[in-house]
Length: 314
Image (cartoon, rainbow, N blue to C red):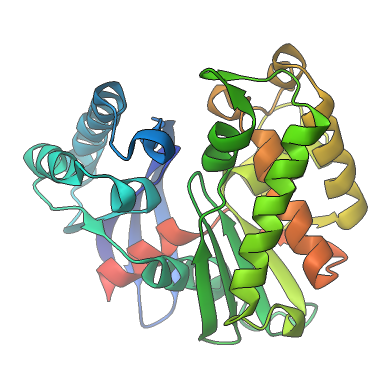
């Protein structure tokens, strides 16, 4: 076993996993897993820069994570940064801050690398399952981008497209910096048009129609699953590998897009940082299911973060 720490810094959240990994047996023993909503991608789609307040929120989370990593004695730390920091003009400021706090330089990975980590993290546990047919389509809906990966034991094709829950909300569901509550039909139609165009782009290189099992990752998907399961509180064990039908996803998506901020915030499993972006995130999932004809989505709590941990332990 090798003790490693993996950090995934996305557009909306930053997450930490400290785990003991055995690459020989495929066993991963989780010691600490946590998530903080930092909205690093705040305004990036509009300004092209990381906002000072977004950077400070992210650095505060890094300081808290550094304390956990030191306490648990991880042998190696790997910090992966995704869409927002990949797009920003001032990403060097972000890199310097992380290096000062954690002693490691964040790796601003490509969309293809992001997809590979997501696929490994999501499917490693599914090996040997006889109730799930391959190939898998792994869909990882982030804040700034969505990764679509088709594979069996390994990745066959992957594409990252710039439709994430934060990016779509800021681009189409916001007026003068304020989220429309609830959005108009014209606004949601604009989100849908962007998603469909992105799926057309993905389909040029990823054989979406060949997939037999849809595996969904990240906060938008797990939140939809938690609502579908009727949980009174967020329960990772109940959500992990749950199977949510297309009809449930469609109903919840329509409900989230019709609800007010207060109504969404009142849902027991809704994280405060997802209240304003869940509608767009759910719409991405729904569009993928409609495009592929998937009757259900297998929800995974293990995703890019677990893939990063496996890469650190290798």
